[in-house]
Length: 143
Figure 1 (cartoon, one colour):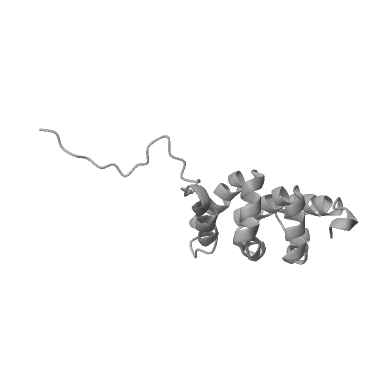
Figure 2 (tube, rainbow, N blue to C red):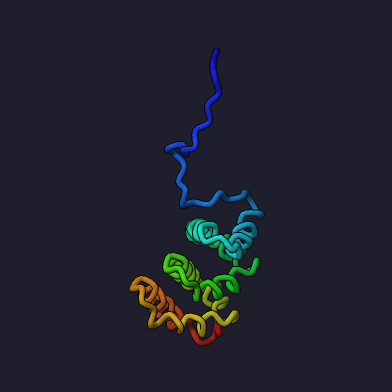
């Protein structure tokens, strides 16, 4: 007779650093909720998943509509270096698109980014400088 065994190890094809993402219109609102979680690992997973999704301009528009920028602005001052790094990376991807640059200006993210110019983590400073470089390329008539 066979016995059921339940292993405490994850299958080899599951990456524990990735958040499970909902489908369709529910994906980004769910990630936005997870960014507000008190658990660090949940926040990090949500940031990793968002970083993958935000490359698609359609997801970028939806992310701005959902209100990600307010949560990302808060996460810029997080104690964890990984959270700050992924947050600046997401903001840099957003700054590559015109709608993203306008969202950064309208939501006051630029003033929050100035706090990271002296960040002890090199990649956070680099991402911050790249965001400012992209913002400088915004034509005057779009402000």
